[in-house]
Length: 110
Image (tube, rainbow, N blue to C red):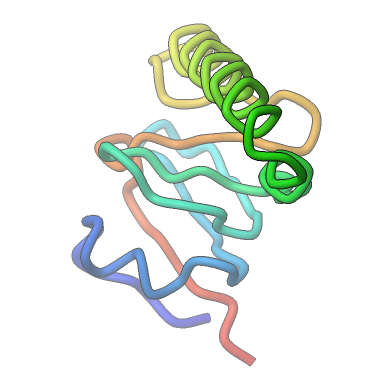
C-alpha cells in the first residue's frame, strides 16, 4: 500500500482507475476503484456504460446526456447528504467520499 498525501484533487487525480483504500476521521474504511474526482469529492466504482450508450445518435445523445447528468447529480446529492456525518453513502456498488472526511488514503500498488 502506497500512502497518498496530501489529499487534494491534484494528488488524487493520477489514481483514477486504480484501487484505493480510505479511512475517514470517523474510522470508517472504504475500498474501491476511483472513477473520478470532482468538487472535492472522490467517486468510486461508477459504471462507465451510460456514457458509452449516450453516444449513439447526436439528437438522442443530447437528451440522454442531459437526463443522465441530472439523474447522477440527484443520485450523488442524495447519498452525500444522507449518511451520518455527511461523508458518504453506498448505493449498490458505487459510493462517494468527500475529501474533507478522509483521514488516510492509500493506493493498492502491486
